[in-house]
Image (cartoon, rainbow, N blue to C red; front, side):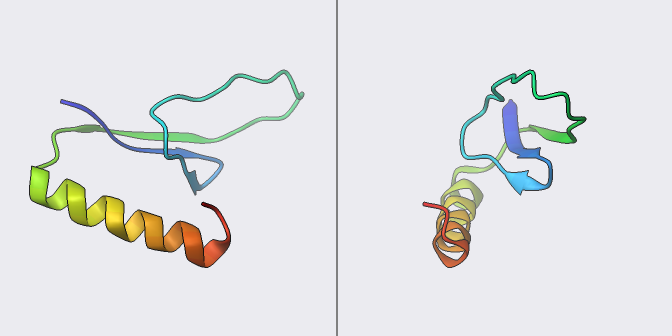
Length: 58
């Protein structure tokens, strides 16, 4: 088991960590825990990579 997805302020994070910054803002964090089957993991990562390229995040 582990982190399936991690979002910071609605943006999917590619790393399973969040850097803390004292910027005086309130932020939203969404963490989904569990196990991903290997086949689903590979497809999800491919889709996430395509989404990142489409939005300019690589």
